[in-house]
Figure 1: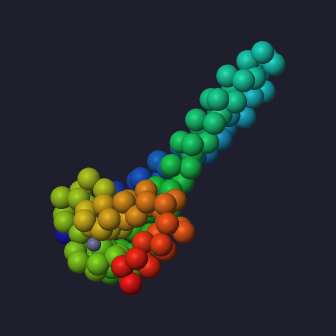
Figure 2: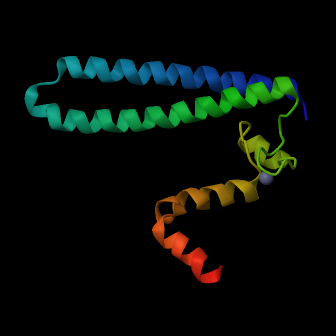
Length: 129
Ligand SMILES: [Zn+2]
């Protein structure tokens, strides 16, 4: 794997994300200035979408920054959960991938299940203890 190519890719993505984040913020503000009160509700919806998109960009930016750090420390391409190498195919599609596919899936599942982890989960444990 050519780390310089990856670094170049990641830096490019970072610039793109930073530009997007700044651009979206500017859009929201310009739009707000010229909107009549009748359009305020629609505007707020637009703004909501912008903010959502913004936080998505922000998350990716964080991952890109972390991937650049891992390039520096030589940990790049290693799954942060199981420490196995992440497949090159995956890194080609997602150069800032933090986890290998099985771990990513496991983590996604865990996050989906999170709200259910509570009293009922504890009960479950007690039954089988
Ligand atoms: Zn893994």
